[in-house]
Amino acid sequence: MIEKKTAISNDETAILVGLIQQDQTEEQVNEYLDELEFLAETAGAKTVKRFTQKMKHPDSKIFVGKGKLEEIKNYIISKGNITIVIFDDELTGSQIINIEKELNTKTIDRSDLILDIFASRAKTAQAKTQVELAQYQYILPRLKGMWKHLERQGGGVGTRGPGETEIETDRRIVKDKISLLRKRLAEIDKQSFTQRKERGEFIRVALVGYTNVGKSTLMNLLSKSEVFAENKLFATLDTTTRKVVFEQTPFLLSDTVGFIRKLPHHLVESFKSTLDEVREADILLHVVDISHTQYEEQLTVVNKTLVDLGCAEKPTITIFNKMDLYEANVFDQWLEDEVKQDILRELKERWQEETKGNCVFVSATEKRNLDGLRQTILNKVRDMYQIRYPYRAEYFY
Image (cartoon, rainbow, N blue to C red; front, side, top):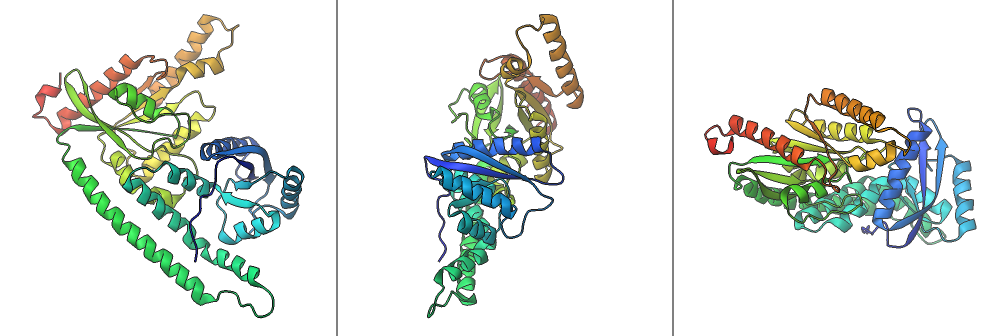
């Protein structure tokens, strides 16, 4: 029988593997591997080496070329302390088995790593059920590869590998488990929907954005509540909702799970109910880490996910966070103040134009321009009350 295992235990030593395919540059793949390294660190693994290879298409059996796999194998043998190999792209069941057999080292892919982090971060019954569902959906298409591996292990005279019946039995067990978890989630969804309905006639505001951009820190500052916030990916899994009042105008503010590139599609499906906070919001606060070198790509990933969720047309305020780090990265000590002001003015003018005036530049850690942010949110919330609940006139002014 198959069983779910923890992909990474603490104090693992990892090597990362990425493919530079036709439509990618080496720089892009290195950025992806930076993120993969951060994911590995979040899960408890220390990265000591990266391997990349240019290929038009991944190899169907071992993902990379034979020579590259040999190079990785020799490195593992020479080091002697490598405990895990992490691939940046999704692997099939048979690819994982073939690579593990060749390298004699535990091998996982990006999806498995993300699932592992989600599993360790899930605290509520809802989050735990969502993660478990995603894990079984990940396992299902890989069952055959797992069985082939067991078949070869048997080997020798008088041993017979598990036949189709055993594979089918496992497949049925996993499908039954998926069905059961979906039913359980539907029940939790029903309860969550009832809870959300009982919140009354308040405008709902949801913080969205790439993972680790500072959403929870802003949530803490805006709602004066303590939400778990740290410099790790997926620090927030369970949606937190707080009632916030700005100048006698109340609204509900929710912090949501962060998005990430190459997010496994079954994970998005599993976290449907958590993302309902985004779907049912009246206003979105899209938080962007402007100090990140790839902030524009991250912004695009989030916008694409919002399109997939059917939320792209919602009124949105884009919050460019971490301005203090942006300035530290861009400005050097010899730059004149006038030039600094020109750079900042051009940056702000560009995004004011692109967001049609719906953006704010802040630093949550330095509490910079928080009054401006509060005023922008308040204006948007009051406008929305006039549209949604015109009889609640006491909230307009």
